[in-house]
Length: 509
Image (cartoon, rainbow, N blue to C red; front, side, top):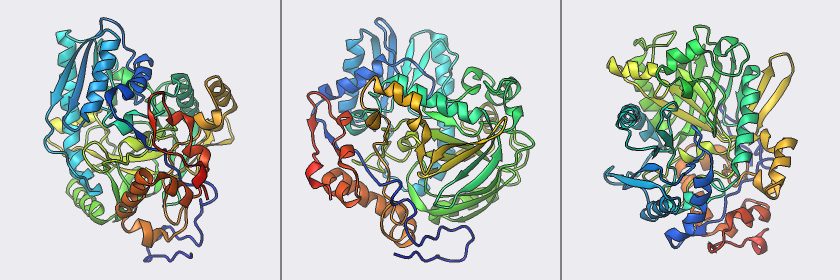
């Protein structure tokens, strides 16, 4: 079906045929029917054995006698909380559970991200203050708390992620894939980024942005970020700020220089909270100069931009809140968008940003940085907002010459690296261990349909339909989108004593 250009705005996607229909076919993992907390224990057992890291890979590294605080709220499924308690008991920890009442479970719309992150920034700052007090009290050795934002890495108390919201998000090979594999993927990605002198990101939904990865960001060996910048932007949390986050590799450093030169266009149809009508933002010298379309999300951002363009923020070379500062890369191939209960409570688009090859672009103040906390104390509006890229291509001009591709059409090329595949083969079939379990279905991009009429004008309507079919009619979904049945019957999604809810081999068209 021919695509028709909707309006005259330059840079709007316009395809005669879906450009990725033969490159990135949609797929989603089977639903695993979990009946009890006991069935979740094998997944959490793998997490309990993983080494601690300061990033987004859940790695609890539990030790007998450790004093552990598990923080949960009423948005967590009780079955998951019970399974966590059983793991903490199994490993002989001395644990407590802190229950927080977040009020009624919210049903989100994508445009709610604007208000959410104006408030979330304050909440994260309060968490960091609370962690510092816990450190002084010497009551705990480890906190299992939250699944996003910075942690206080240098503290004696280790802060680890608690991304286990529902049985669906817990019963996943994202948490059982050997840590050696995802650590190698992280390192491969970081090595490419830190050795790049210039980077370009494109995406079929309209993003095309280029920027210099300045020498001044780094130390003399380009091993860590420059200590002067780390001290300025991450004062008090330098161990966190000096390098990349596991599972969330920084394609652009979380700091500013006066010579910022990022120029181009950011465009997409989703943020951390949910899908939004197609939005486009123009960037000049690292500053967002223009926001086009985007429905209610765009309206709210334009209003906030007008209210803050005259304000000078700490650490910023120019006035205004709307600076582009983030291009972070997911690295775990088995992360997927939640299906059951999507857009309710914690079940939004935040989780999916960790899937390998997905890039999320962030703008505003740098989350929980020293300069953001300073701005908040000055009474300035602080927060940051996002656009997700599901099919980005990231190319790098390298220090010393040559060009390398890091991501191609949403596929992180670390997954094809011979050394990483050799490592994966020690644990199983590298074709399955290193293949994405989830690739979103987008009409007009990687499946039939009209990008504008069937998707971009109201992505939420399509996404909810897609997830409903995937959850409740999984074999039908896989057949409809032409997925290879090996992904539907991927043994990584089957566990001993866990009921297999899907068998797609006979349904593949």
